[in-house]
Every structure is written in C-alpha cells, then in structure tokens.
Image (tube, rainbow, N blue to C red; front, side, top):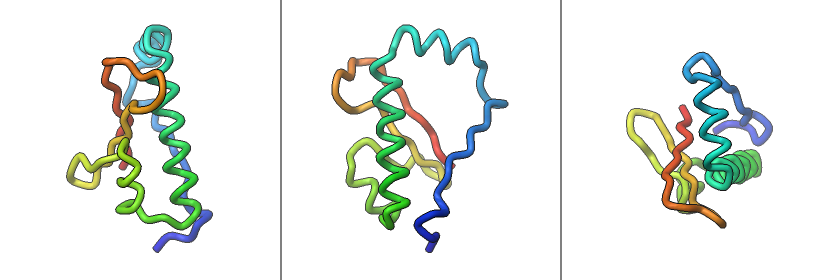
Length: 88
C-alpha cells in the first residue's frame, strides 16, 4: 500500500494540444471546474488513506479497464457535455 503522502499529480502535456484545451475551457467552464474539483477530492481521499476501490464509491470515478481510471464531470452546475479525465 502506498504511504499517505505518496499520491501526487504528474501532468503530461505531450498528449494534448493546448489550443484545444483552452477552447474547451472557454465553452465548458463548469464541467472543467467539476472535473478538477473531483480530481482534488480523489487526491485528498487517497492521501487520507482511502484505497482506489473505496474512492469509486464517490460516483464520479470509475474503471475504464487495463489500469485506466476516469473521473467525470458530475457535480453542481453540470450540463449535458460529458467530460472525462483519465488517470493511469
């Protein structure tokens, strides 16, 4: 099991185009805000000692298969635009 302080974010910008992210952020601010809020909730829970299996009970996180996890945009002020943040 990982120690509570070992969960950190590592962003790999090489797999995305910055211009697409900015354009999406302008049109869908609430969805993007919800995804980042959900990501912070997951990170806080993991650093607090919860396991990945337990974190899936939050309702916005699920397995995509082959070691990939997804956090979606569910939360306050969420519209119909679906957004997923994938984690390895």
